[in-house]
Image (cartoon, rainbow, N blue to C red):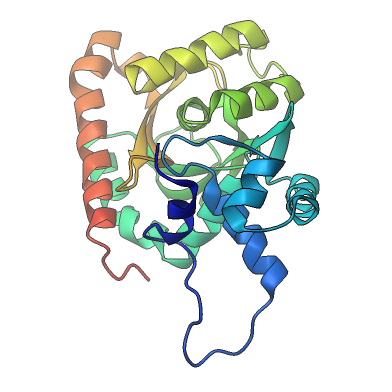
Length: 276
């Protein structure tokens, strides 16, 4: 295990003594440094003592920082330790939005729509919802009223289940504990144990397929979009008129198309191009 003091010096840590800037709020800096500590190496939970030692702070100061972040919804108590809460993902969404993530992905989303002949969307997790950040809709007699900025409960949606599958176990359990599923169609999964099983299956196979849960005759196929560190930051999906495709065709033809487009988005992000 790396020494504790190495965490503050790792690449990507908040810079100190930035020249030319005199504005500085130490309490805010320390709060952000607490969030940085999580996920460093294999560290996914921290105690008050851990935070105090790694920040060089008193235990009382560490407790105030952890308590504040917990009240704001960025951390969750797990016994004597703390873990990240799903609200942290909202920070990542704001970052992607500021970079023009939608602009980067839009041509790829539109190209996939053309290749597959089905509506294609890109979504991110915001709290318990999937937020659509890019969408290209296929021409159909029956259309689903979704656009950029639309939100759907994550557990109902193929993108949402991909994003939920990427959460740490405790964050997923916290989400499921608070969830109050409502049936939209007769096929909607409302049993939490079954929902957990399906989400974990998505984690295992690396993609999600659902059908008839949001609208009769409509299926969703989704894959995770990962950053250069392997973190799932978004999900790409195809919304399918299920009557037009057999399950074999979906697995054999459409899933490879979807994965290819996902890789294209990941490659663009890894190049650190000017996205705005």
